[in-house]
Length: 205
Length: 205
View 1: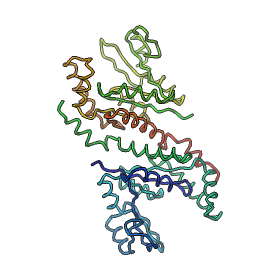
View 2 (view 1 turned 30 degrees about the vertical axis):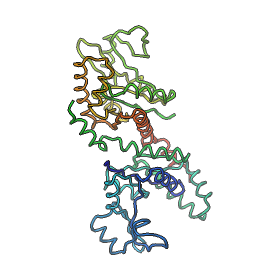
View 3 (view 1 turned 180 degrees about the vertical axis):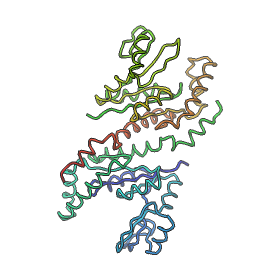
View 4 (view 1 turned 120 degrees about the vertical axis):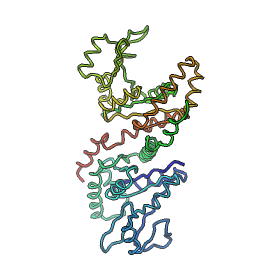
C-alpha cells in the first residue's frame, strides 16, 4: 500500500477553488478525501460530526493545541476556532488515500512546516480584473465586500512564490487536468517511490 | 514567450528510453527538440552536422572545454569524445522549446549542476528480471554483453535517488503519459511562472 499525498490547495475567493476541489474528489473514485477540520462553532442542522467538521468544545480544542494534535489551527479571541487535526489526515494517508486540504496561505505554510512532503498548490485567477468580474457576476456579495475580497486576494496571491505549484484557473478543465498532473508527479519522486527503488536495487541480476 | 524546459532522461539499456523519447518528441508537435551532442568521431554516411551531431575535431572539442561551452562532456584518452554544447540547448530554451537530453547518470548530474532548473527523470524497469528479459528478447547482444549491461543497469539505477523523478516503464503508454505530466508540472512552479505572478500582483484592483 502506497502512502497518499497531502495535497494543499489555496486560492482567493472567487477563483473557483471549490469547483476544482469537487472535480478532483469526484474524479478520484475514492482514492482522495477532503480533510475534515475541527471547529468550536455549533453544528448546523444536517451537519455530522466527523463528516463536515469535528465539532469540539473550547476545552477540547485547547487540549488538542497543547497536545500538538493540529497540523495548523487558527485561534482568534472571541471567535470560532478552526484547525486541521493531524490524526485524521495521517490515517487517510496511511490508508493510501490522498487528502485534499483547502486552506489559506498561513495555514498552508504551517502545514508544510509540519508535513514537508505535502504538495502546496495556489489556484490563481488569469487576472485581477477577471477575479473582480467573477466576484461581481456571482452577485452574492455587496460591493464593499467584493472590494475587501479583492484586497485579500492580492495579498494571498503575493505569496504564490511560497507554493510548490501555481495553476491558473482560466479554462476550468485545463486547470483540473493540471492539478491532477501535479498530484501524479508528486507520486513519481524518488522519495515517494523509495520502496520500489530499494527493492529494485536489491534484486539479484 | 515562455522559456522551454530542459528535460533530462536517463535509463539503463533495454528500458525503452528511445521509444519513450521518440513518443515525447512526436507528441510535442515541434515544441520539443532533441539536444544535439558534439562528438569527435567521424560522421557516418547520411549524418548531417548539426542534426545527428556537431562533428568536431579534437582541437575544436578541447577549445570548447576550455571555454566552458559544454553543459557536460566525456573525454576518455584514445576514444571518441562526446559533449552537450550549452549554446544549442540555450537557444532552443530561449525560443520556448523544451529540450530532451538522453544522457547517463554522471552526465545528468553534471547538467543539473550547470542548469539547476533542468528536470531529471530516471526511466526504470519494473524489475531487473524484466530488464533481463527485454535485453534477451531483442536479441541484438551476446550473453556476456547482456550480463555487462545488467550490471551497468544496476549501478545506474542505484542512483535513482539523485533524480527529480522516477518513471517505471511497465506499460509504455502510462510511462509516456507520466513523463508528459512531469514536464507539464515543471511549468507550473512559481519560478517558471514568475512573469505571470509578478504581473498579476502588480495589477490594479
